[in-house]
Image (cartoon, rainbow, N blue to C red; front, side, top):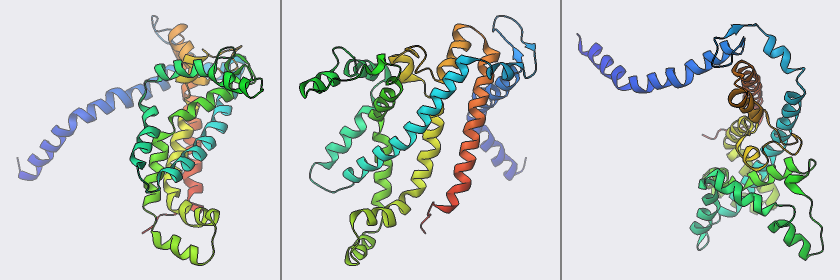
Length: 291
């Protein structure tokens, strides 16, 4: 064996655990779910080929349509609101003032709290009858809504609660803002630019690659929104907060209707792929990559 082949063999040997993990836990499940989506598969019985019947049934399933509508609501609200919250927090955290490290830690800390513990606290905050939020509103003479118990408010409540984990996004944007040359701000000040003009003309172009990354990852996350609604509402009231992720879980692990669940998963995958391609294609017009 030549030296070059020996080095290649050693490299493959070191990469083998990662490659096996990728094949077994990523590639194979993706291919298998694509196959099962074209079958009637109930785990305990062998899959039976039915073609695209699962996909046809989806669009006549009122609960899937309801969950898909709810998921679009989460997508439309979670992504822009998370962007605004993340950037606003980053603008505050980027300032070099005494004790800023403590505040950065406090902003990031909620994101490492286990989701079940956090959801339990959020349930207490937004309890319609003895919750902290309605208690504070009552003190100023405002009658609070029923929040998670009201079909009209439950999805927006979940969107608000999800902002509790904005810390990592804020720190990501803060890191991008720290790379902006201070000379540009000084020149803009001399030209008479106000705070908004400085942000829009200087800060935003420099953090636009991070914004693109955030939009792609948060859009995919919103389409897979599962933990908070599953723990806090269980999809209720009256399926008003049911997401596609929750509906997939129901069919896969409650009804053992794995083929139908796989079909829904592929719908979400295709939508995620289309959104990602659109964002990447349009990014050439607004994302600035500095030299």
